[in-house]
Image (tube, rainbow, N blue to C red; front, side, top):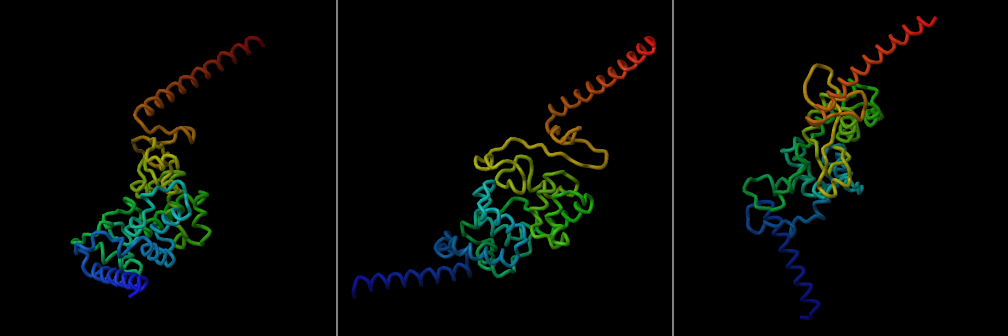
Length: 279
């Protein structure tokens, strides 16, 4: 047998072995040969499954994140864009989506759903507290019903109905970054202050995402009832105290502003009295 024939035979045996390993791991992911999925379910196959899922369901939250990753958005971190993490966000019911029955999720569910699975890649998590698609659509509908003139609502309004919104998660992020309202609560759980790596959805800066560090962000609230806490707008869009010190200084500034207004009114009275006496 020639060297070329030997090499071909070895390649056939390797391919057959990988095929057997793939099939056996899908049936029993607790086997020791399944620890590293790169030999039977590599990133290329994962990307194929993601392509299938996001072609069939482009509006779902995990696919919204993937779209920003594939577009090279500098505000997206490698962690958020990890293919296995994206599969988890879409296929694992831990994130509130109901996609585990989709064909593109079949391999992931077989490998990662069993509690006895030893596949290392199954430990890669999706976006923490990701807002599920149905919830994002519901919140966008409520927000744009309450504040229909917000320009960010145009992201869904152009579709004719919030339920047909092409990207509910991105629309929700744009609205809540512009002005926090009560229906932003679930978005805020996904995007707490200091979140990095999800700039298009949570705000912040691409530089902070690249270095995995971020200064606290102040987000103005718009709560239409008596409440307590920080992060309320004070006179101007850029005046939003988000720490105890900032809040204390704001109180001092407001009191001094009141005193100044009182002094200006007293000065006006004195000036008017002087003008009358001069007449």
